[in-house]
Length: 210
Image 1: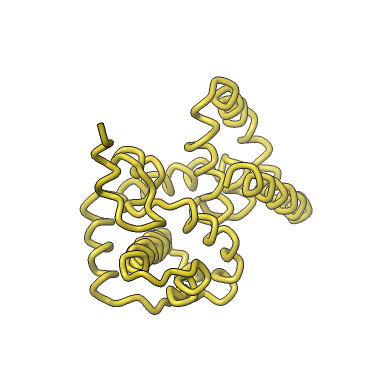
Image 2 (image 1 turned 135 degrees about the vertical axis):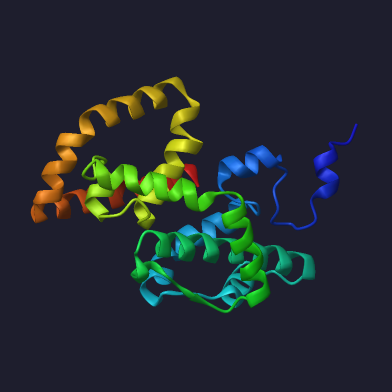
């Protein structure tokens, strides 16, 4: 019997995932190919503060209309998630410009708020700020929505929490992180060291898990 989900796959970039799996992955348009592109170009997007969907289409060699449409949808979802999160957390420096159609952006803004992503983000942000940035990565980058923090959260949710050893690691991290985070928050030297270590960890994560 043919898996019903297979008949719904239209783009070569789209993955055969259930709605729940897409939700766990944090995207309605989840694609490993697209995700790898984001990781490889994250620094450029951050420095230029601009997301160019035409560049994505070119880099991923999307020529079929269905593939271009899928990438545009994924790009719109990314821009809305990033920009609305930045606004809610009062981090305007994280907002990016883009060249995606307004109607597509409006569509994902509605989804963002209808699904309550704003409420989840605000609660998460309050938890971190009220606890004096008790998590090391958040204390290092001064925000729970910093790109590095987002990558580590995704690694935690999609990989670490799926195994017994990973869950134990996370529990230990939460136990020991508050005093370490407080020291990092107060010391520029420690923060600089922590930035180097975390960025090195992220490179390992990218090579092994992406």
